[in-house]
Length: 119
Image (cartoon, rainbow, N blue to C red; front, side, top):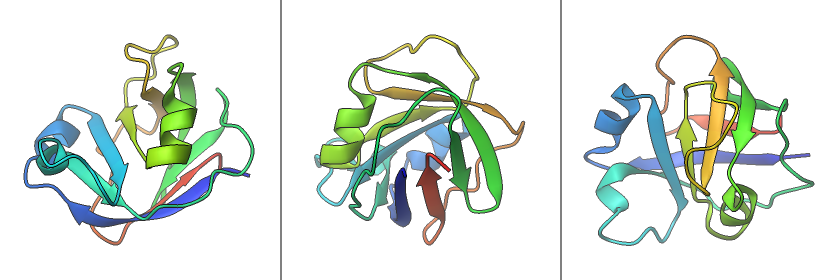
């Protein structure tokens, strides 16, 4: 159950967002205007539904999903696109956001990193 993928490319400005506890993902065909800000991931199939309380694992780091925007699951399934916000918020600040709480560390998102939603 979930969505398992791998980071294949890191946009030139993606790490600046990560320093602010935010990461934008897209599978493959990110719009050119957004690509520099994105972590490009492999397209995968979403199995089941994402839900608050499920895990998110990046490499060896584990978080808990605390809020899901109204279109986050659909965007992840169709485009590999979500905005991960590592703030533990209980209410999403954007329709495509997935808020995460738990580990108080900068996520180890880099090319080659495995990302598992619903872990």
